[in-house]
Image: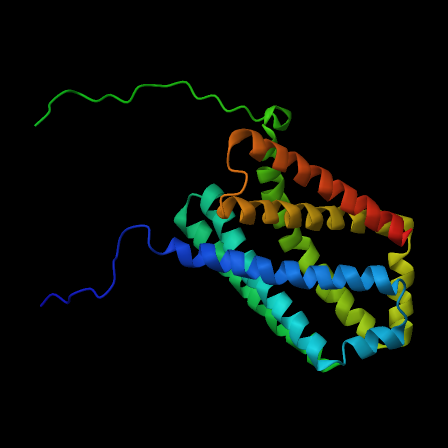
Length: 118
Length: 131
């Protein structure tokens, strides 16, 4: 018995999701970057107490995590594209993509532990 | 059924790999890619490491602040700042191209030039700020 596919197995329908995600994460990162740059220009030098209290603010923690998650997802799509362009043997490419994913997931866990562990 | 033999012609391949011969948008594009890879490989772990190290205690904070204040380290960090700035401005240019801003040849060349200049100018401004 042949099961009917409930999705389109061919065609250029899948790329747009990554395309869109790449742009949404870019906008989130750009906005957060502007806030950070503005802070750097206004604040100037920061002492330990300021630094510590900044990272104790729940709003800042959530904003920073949102930024970092955007970085990691954006990096995944970008690096995957680079690997698809230059690494032709499927086995090596898959291996490298797995490495990149493991690295980025590790960075995600690390980020949470930094932001909420202090 | 076509029976004409289709022998693949040995066409000469010529890739102009000299970056200086790329048009401005091409230069912005390859820099966008290279800076992306550099930021992924080095800036992500560096930033996370510095965040972790500076939040542990005041003495660690001062220790790392002194290291960052070394001129050599500042220059390396400014390299990363340029990578971030170029990636940032080139990315905004792509977002504008997505919504059909400056897609014709001349405007695209002009916007590419602006991106290259803004990346360098922003890096210099930050360099002046931290020196």
